[in-house]
Length: 408
Image (cartoon, rainbow, N blue to C red):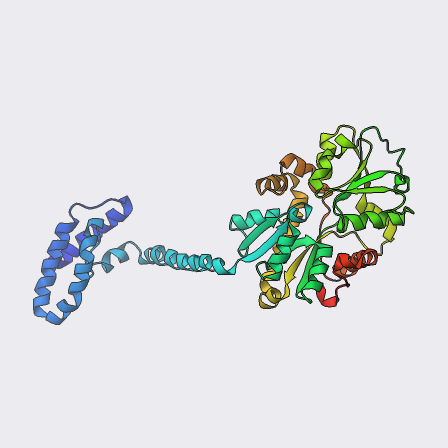
């Protein structure tokens, strides 16, 4: 028995040394062999005890190269080195790993599928996108960017998108098309349109919108928001859009970049970031009118120019109300960061392909009308805007104004 106690003490000392130095004890196997001989003597006196402990000795044998003791002697060394930290060091990380693994496994089928339209409507989502890619959001996101309204319409209609950033009149159209299965969560973009003049055309010559009479104006968006905005502002300033000016529509905003090469005296109504690009590329060109300001002047505060919003499928909203609230919190933070960290957001716009160059994005973002309007304010102001659209052309909002359940 004295020999056994001596062996135990020697083993304990060696285990402490191994733990402290991170090395292996060359004499450990000898001490363990002596201990095992003592155990065999005891086993002869108590066969039942030996039968219960032999598997433990067998299982621990390979661990001898790491300096571990057989099952019977393992407790003494652990107690000698303070068992609590050892328990914590082994068990806590295991529990944490299991928890993180569970959280990481969830996203695969639980990611919120967000579609964003390229251009100003997508700028507000850039910081959210970067945070999601870095694993810094409260929930996972599967984000798709597209330049085609039709792709977003199809994704929402088929249930392949949960939330989307789109034009406000398209949101109304979708609401009518899907028989009320779409809700608008927030307005994210005010006006992004400006009327630009080429070099040589002074602001004194065109001091107000009323001075546009007789001019040629190039614009994108025939049958869409830009056309209706332009017509509303012209009419509000006593100009008949069909008789007093010539409106030349182009297919895409990018086509405006070459207008002055062919028609050097024309005016251009351009969205961001095309407007910024035109001003950077054409020395002497100037912005004459911000269409958001001109809209406000005509409407007299009855409505606001609200061109972009985020919508949700009602089926997703009903099944995942907490996910939608989390999205709104994180999306608002993303927009606010775009407003406060223009340079960082501009870099993300280039990185994610939203705007080709960060330098252009940095100048365009402050002109993109980024906002975050929800609740009653959204309902009142967006409702007024859609009313103007409806009065101009019912088809622009889907043939009818959306009911109250359109507004979240």
